[in-house]
Image 1 (cartoon, rainbow, N blue to C red):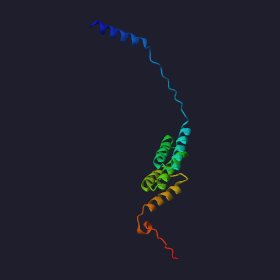
Image 2 (spheres, helix red, strand yellow):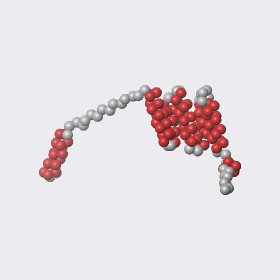
Image 3 (cartoon, rainbow, N blue to C red):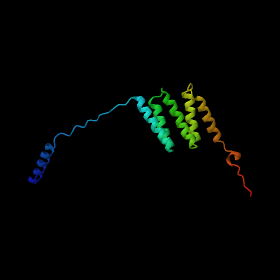
Image 4 (cartoon, rainbow, N blue to C red):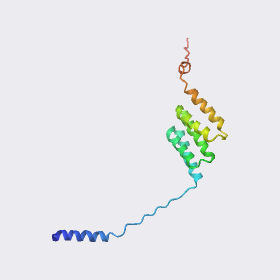
Length: 141
């Protein structure tokens, strides 16, 4: 090695030793109560539903259900996800959510509403010429 290479090597070695130890980074994780997390996610879903973002709302409702499936909010979350799909005419997705609700929560007090909404999804899915073409009236003067 030449003298210049030795000098650069020693200089780099000294600079590295002077750098000191890396700073210790501490992260503080604040745990929320599971109920509070679920209610916060449910609220995010309601906000998204009110803004018309049905897919994000359904994702949030399903996330709320997964956090605490034994609570009353879990069943409401499935119903709200299906209602969001229904309002945007995604009848197949709404019916899938409702079928899951009926099998998973058979003793829920809102079961009759789930059956009603499921029937409406099936009704709205019907393609019929009478339903497809609305009658129009022509006004004569």
